[in-house]
Image 1 (cartoon, helix red, strand yellow):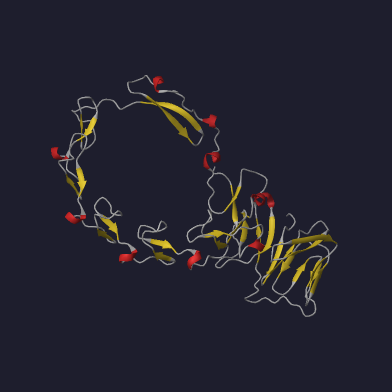
Image 2 (tube, helix red, strand yellow):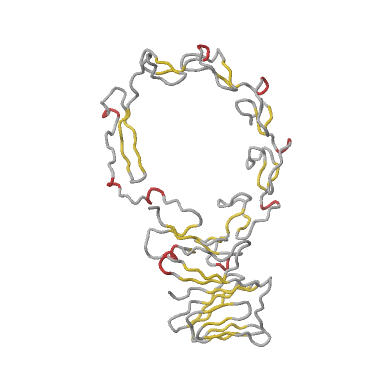
Length: 370
């Protein structure tokens, strides 16, 4: 198993970071949480100085453990100095998650403050970046499902024929009316062209056209008008002014002439929000109740079809952990919150720094579908 990469201890608001330890050499470092400044220097031992206590560690060991009130590692130990302590309580909770990244035999341990409702990962292929996923590719470190697209196809383009029947309509001469159309296939990849021809002439007896259609003298099918026996469907009526060859002539029955609007809708034929029957959804300023964390603002460009919009974070909504209010930012979502960027867990409110963004969950190493 490779050397332990990073160990962090989060106690209250202070964050301390230890540089990698291994191969018989140790180093010391301090990470300040006011501006994220990192100061590291190599030496034969490591120490943390405070106004009320000190810790002194010996040479780097093979492993270690961390609890709320003491820290130890094989080959070295650390203890609180006089007047100092590392008490573990509700406000200074220290959570330690050790997970095996699996791919590439990467082992990493980190002191993580788990986000509410989260715990240590149970998967063995978790990651922060693709570097945690091992040297064999293609592979990605992703939050949620990663869409590989056509590049994920395991079959080479040459494994199946790719049609190249034509480059222009003039090449399609098997039957009259032939056209050259693009043919694409994602797996295996194919960008080709094929000839497309109109269907053969229809027959009247037997009728080769579909239901509600008839065969014209030129061999093409056409819709039978409603005035010639082709009945309209439920909630529609025959309009003789519209009925003609090729057009059935049916129109929706308006809600003010017999059609019944569905629950949650009302009849308002003159509304710009009305459907073909004249029905519109009841807006929030006329009886509809907006869901939690939304407000009624009919006419807003951010409003849904009921007139409800997300309460923006600059007007009352509190962004969740690992996000900040940035209403005008391109990356903002829903309430105007945007994911907090990071280079390490120390910049996050909780959870993990995955691909440069804070997340309640670690990423997972994903390979293309087989």
